[in-house]
Figure 1 (spheres, helix red, strand yellow):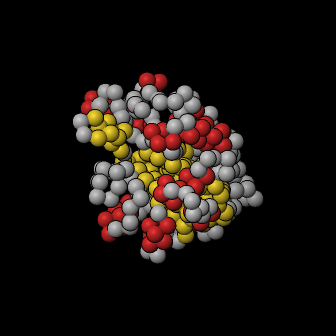
Figure 2 (tube, helix red, strand yellow; figure 1 turned 180 degrees about the vertical axis):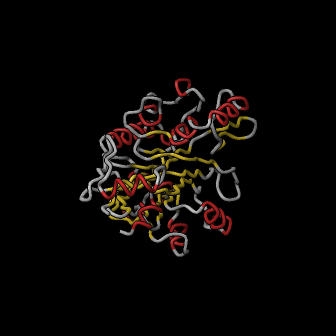
Figure 3 (cartoon, rainbow, N blue to C red; figure 1 turned 90 degrees about the vertical axis):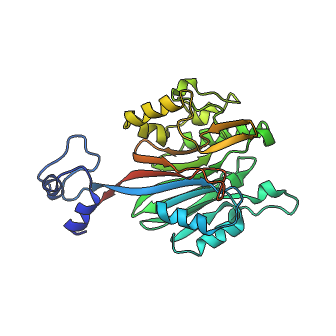
Length: 313
């Protein structure tokens, strides 16, 4: 690997210090990638991750324009029809894609809800190594997992869609509990995009958020049964000014608006759509794009993230 390429990939470290580390003249105390010539060098790889429930729509020019504007490296989608996935796959936005409906085709006796799946799209430097569904769920097509690689560094990429309790009752909390348990036993770097259909109230103080079912906080609560973090809450810890602005405008939440539930005069602003990341993935920015019912009843969520790779010079 050339010095130039290595320098471009590294962030937050002076070139002089980096050169000394790579040549073996300096060793950072506690560094996970030691600095001797025969050891690896840690490189921060920035990438853009998006999550979007596309609401059973056909692919339109407005979808394509919006996706071009956010320029995602990895994209998780929910409520995706086979046609939407196929049409998006034909475009030059991504290098590869996986669909849950290709891994589990709906039965002839199953209704419309079972004909909507999850998708994951990606492009270089990421490549898909393998994919799976979580067969332990009642609706496995709503939990797509791609085991991706950036160089030789693995990244588990997930797209989850939690069944709404209004339609499916206790299947919702059982799904959230099962996902929390599965995430809790994963190792390595993980990023997940999700339409959670929860919480009931997304309070700025996570201890004051409200839930419909007791098992929902296992996945999204302040002390979940896994090590992943809500990327937007992580980002807000670096932007107290933005958090204060949100609290002034919506004292009881939500922190952002990604969906509006209810009809008529009984409509409630919600943050149902989240990005979860393992602690080793740095979060530098998260944006909730404005809701536009012309393309979906959910907002597109976009995160600027950093994955630590180890390279051998």
